[in-house]
Amino acid sequence: MAIPNMADTANATTGAPSVVGTEHAIVRELYQRFGEGAFVFQTNRDRLPTLWVERSQLVAVLKFLREAPKPYVMLLDLSAIDERLRQHREGQPKSDFTVFYHLVSIERNSDVRIKVALSESDLNLPTIISIWPNANWYEREVFDLFGIKFEGHPHMQRILLPRYWEGHPLRKDYPARATEFDPFMLNDARQDEAEQALDFKPEEWGMKRGRADEDFMFLNLGPNHPSAHGAFRIVLQLDGEEILDCVPEIGYHHRGAEKMAERQSWHSYIPYTDRIDYLGGVMNNLPYVLAVEKLAGIEVPDRVKTIRVMMAEFFRISSHLLFLGTYIIDVGAMTPIFYMFTDRQKAYDVIEAVTGFRMHPAWYRIGGVAHDLPNGWDRLVRDFLDWMPKRLASYEKAALKNGILRSRTIGVAQYNTEEALAWGTTGPGLRATGLAWDLRKVRPYSGYENFEFDVPVRDNGDAYDRCLVRIEEIRQSLRIIRQCLDNMPAGPYKADHPLTCPPPKERTLKDIETLITHFLGVTWGPVMPEGEALQMIEATKGVNSYYLFSDRSTMSYRTRIRTPSFAHLQQIPSVIRGSMIADMIAYLASIDFVMADVDR
Image (cartoon, rainbow, N blue to C red):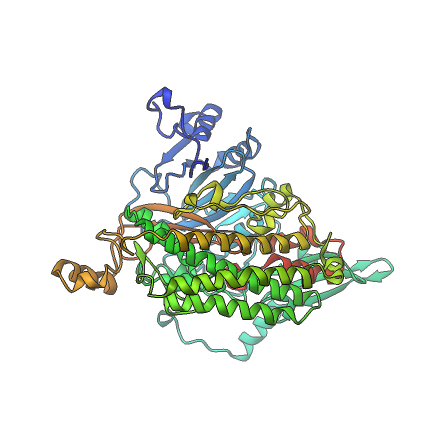
């Protein structure tokens, strides 16, 4: 039986709750502990329980949630919104800036969102690193992009932008277009400033330069290094070959995707989502369009749900194949990646035949998909399903049972479930520790509840198990795709709803109202009702979510993109301390990250 999609509900025999929000068990517990007057309950289109608290009670409330029976063990996300230009905030406390905390309880299979209102003249909050260690990077990101400081934070400095950057880009008074800035000029003084900002000062990170009789080595890995998998820099503090500590540094790939959403229509932003996890293709479209559909109240046809699932699983396979090839290269074997790229090309042949593009189709639409499945799609899918299982078996035999690979990865970069949850680790990295937590199973979306598949898990939580989980996930994706092939529903490929964008092309040729809607939707964009909606999915690398704020406009007022890779890189120092440099390379390979997914 599928676990409900959102928070616990009150016992049906008790009737309607007498106090707002008490249909959620955790809200009842919070009211009982702190009193109903300590909170303002906010209703959202995603039905996720949302509570506003005073700044003075924030830490106490968060500690209670962390230590409650069936605790909220994971801080999934932490970010902010500039409320100063927002017109439609009915029922919400007055706020210039709002910071929100998205917490997850595995035992309850429920979430809760805590919000804090701040005035423009006092943008300060206490840090919560002592409650959830992964708050570190999220608080730095909020400071970087909004200018909100967290008292007690050990490194309250920018994380995505250079230290010399002026302004906070996600504030509403910060321009969203390059044409609103003066032309960029790189003079000598500016270049010197940029180079000085790259200097690593160990003392700033609590590191010593050496002991009484020896100096430590500080080694830069990246930001341009094959094993860094993109523009990623990590500074290692070494005692010989042993890693004493390290500092990951991100931001080299930052493109401002969340800011771009504020100047694109709801429809025209879809291609931008493809480039977040650029190996995930339409998998990136899915949480975005599902969140928009929650705002609009669109229910898509069963055929749309099944098509979306099928194409998302094709991209899960292609992403995992690239992971497997680069993973094996990073531990010293070259040949397998050529075979795996052959398999990826076969997957892309199917993707291109269906969507018209390969890596970045931007093919999902608000209310459906761009067009119906083409003639012959079933034959291509069936050929791929017949091809892939034998290839996987050969990879396991030739590569994953290889003694060198096993010795390089078994027992390397090991962590347990408790540590994974504390750092916000999701996806295969979490399931490799023994916890079968997969959103497709525990909170099915887009019709996943109609499919039979298993959630692969391993127990050791090391670099080897993280690979084995992904291998088995490919098999399960093939199983899901076969069910899509055998049970593809008939029906339309778009919802019959006025906010579906764009409406079906054939209808624009038949009635003037649809033609006008098509014109307005494509030029200005559809106007979404005011409100907030979040959608989480099990993406290729872990939990990916879009949290959308609509102010009854043709564009998003605020788009928050929570990506799995951001959390996974933050965990590196806690896992790798005391290991060898070679172990770091194997660990980076086993994370399976791309920097666009980190920096956005």
